[in-house]
Amino acid sequence: MPKKSDWPRTVTVGSVTVKVYRVAHPTNKTGRAYVVAHRTPSGRKTSKFADPSAALEEARLIAGKLAAGKVEAADMTGGDREELHAARQLTGKIPLLSALEEWKAAKVLCGGHLLTAAKTWADSHRATISATPRRLNQGCLFRASGFSP
Image 1: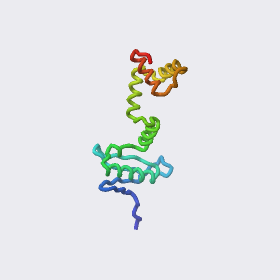
Image 2: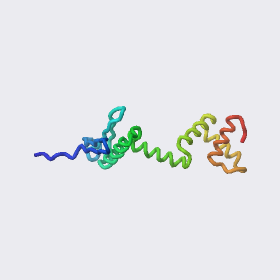
Image 3: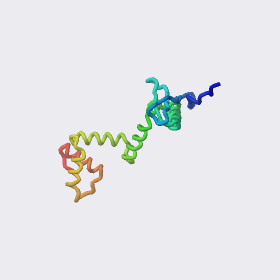
Image 4: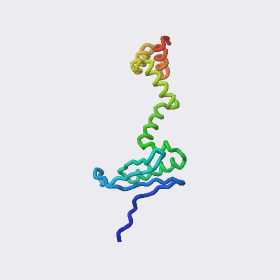
């Protein structure tokens, strides 16, 4: 009598179920891959992992987000989450969208040469004030609008 397979595994949170399948994958060292599958309003989503524990952890995260009603967040990959976390650390206390809006406005006003404009402004003001990113940006914005700081 054949042994019953442990796969697929099901992760359930509330009424949400996410499945993890083990599939043949010749390019992985083990010859297997683990596929996390779930449904969203836009259709079935899958993501592939080499490690079964990583796949099960991702399935738990997705199931938790879907159960909490965070459908868009469930579509984020691990890389997306790491990138968002890194971006938030770069901006410090400034909200990420505020920092991006300010950067975009400065880039447009400086003709796409934001670092060059910031360095030029810093060089011309180095003896009088310390050049913080906010002051560098203000200098660029003032010059672009025809004013001198």
